[in-house]
Length: 131
Image (cartoon, rainbow, N blue to C red; front, side, top):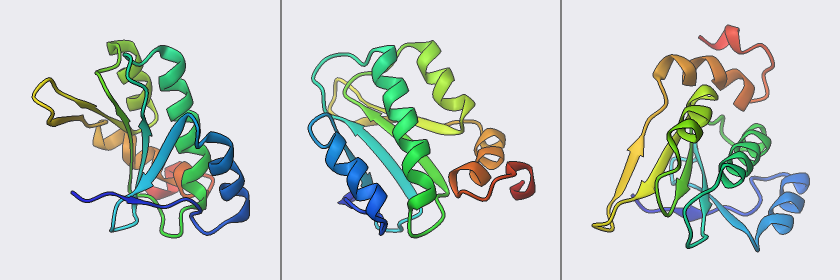
């Protein structure tokens, strides 16, 4: 999968957030533009704080995506703790991490959780209407 850097998502307020976070985290969309990825570039194992930051940024950016997000994912250099993966999954967000073989492993959120949260991601308010 080729990843494209998308620094604005089309909204001035998102460009501001991008500028505020570029030294810590780089955010991407993939060519279909319905997937949003927060990529943590730190070389150390992700802490609970890193996971919470990725979660907050994804939930903040998703409503501003030019195409309604169908999938949100957080990319880490190493696997987060089990509790942190469960936190991401609670919000319908996949966790992706690099394996020792330099391949990437996706730990997908349950599809029911993703479907429930899609209304929140797209800024449509009542998530139950999107199920």
